[in-house]
Length: 502
Image (cartoon, rainbow, N blue to C red; front, side, top):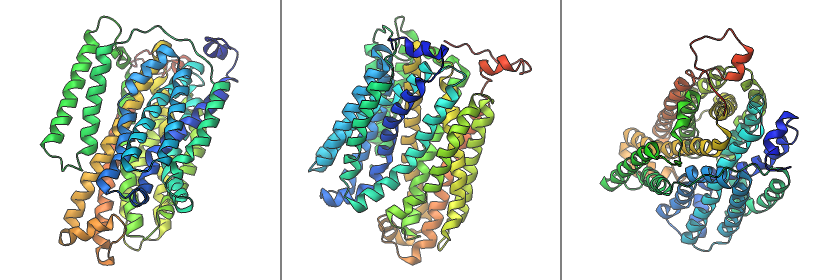
């Protein structure tokens, strides 16, 4: 296959595109699992490396920072040097760093290794969506994004479960060692199956690179560390400085007469802009809802980490089973209806879950709203990603994918920080007479007398992601009908704007 055949082959059929997608999804699955798997291992890492909580938190923070900050840049690098090259480089870095994580002997070394792992993930993630955009025609892209969405939806739920099993059976090191054989297989499959697509001779906006990296670092670092530093003046200075630098970055991108790092013209597409708003709320909600649920399951229900993670199994199964069907539906039905189903199911399921999070509650009553949450997950990821990328010009597929994944990751960081603040606030309100015991409860030692107050605090906290994702639903309701659907449906309302494919 020549460098342009990946895009041209769709004129003959997409039989080569699907194996390429399967190869890419293996690496993408591994990345997303690693964003959540370490949270289950925190107590074991503290014990194994003789560390404290504040230091171990950086094992996750370093990964998230190194993952989120470079996404805009690595997306554009994929356009310049080819998404296959960037994906393979990132996969090799990620796999080697995973082995390094497992062999570390100190927590500081583990933090550095996790940062390198996050950098590898940042190189890989935008390329998966960029390749889908370039090798699948618009009429088949929803099916492809359905598979991508299934991987995204299931991976973030599988991480805690897999982590619990590996830690109980083999030790915390194996949450990293497991990536090595998967990474090797992923490299072989990508070399053989992913096409080498045409590159575009971009000139790099070095000032834009510096501004975006500094702004994203200050913003994400400030948000992540806010709770640990009690949101003191230094944290707010970092956050405000990050926003100011990002504003300067946006101004420079608008004024840059050469080739900006972030083509602001992408946001002229209504669906691209709205899908980015929606995926930010999804990243927020999916990350935030897990914390209060896991604390309630372990400290009130008395479940082990592995058994707590098993609560996510029905949700993951339903999400994965629905995603291919939803992907096909996304190619034929208006995205506001398909995505809207998921974005309605999620807040309803979380509100339902909140209402049944009582002491001594039967487990099956918790599973029912989690099943509805699985339906919501199945209907969210594919329509949103398809809608965001459907109209991207081919030479800007990497840049658009970088933006989309950046907003998702920033949403996740915001969700992690916000839910931590709210949980502490609710615990102070419901257990003011036993603040120390409540804090101890988060590590597994919670007296039965505190169960009612703790349950109420976690139940109220889980309403935050429910409220935030409603904003994503509102954004999805304003999606325009894609051009290929209007071609088949001349009766579509005349007021909707025409969307032109690049």
